[in-house]
Image 1: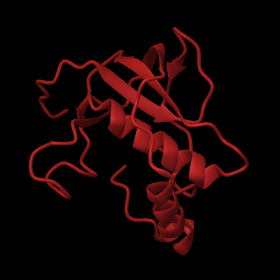
Image 2: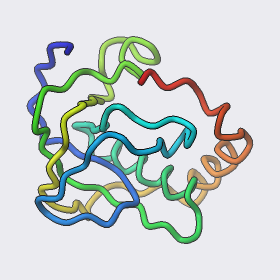
Image 3: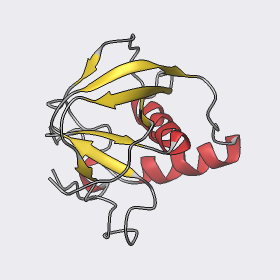
Image 4: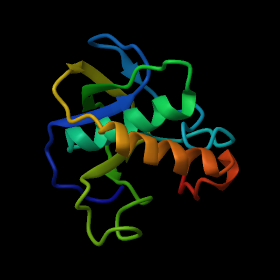
Length: 140
């Protein structure tokens, strides 16, 4: 895997209701492309980036899904997320990573910047305008 020098702390945004010591594992469908089963779990060293991922997941799920952010610890090797690194942003300014090894839940983070109602509405419009299979390629 790509050498990474970031030491965290690391965060994962989701709608799952998790507990300390739970493990997040690969093998589940993507929130963004439900036709894709993910080979990795994704995380970031940016708590608000994890919050954005959680809010998007909640919007895509609908039905009152609750966005949550967790502090996580990688249990194995990890690499820069190729879906954003050097593809959308030079380097890794988003501090986004992925691992095929599980992430251990250290605790829930309650203090992260939520989207404004206007920003949430903008994301809602963009997400619902595209069918799931057209929401962008995922390098899996």
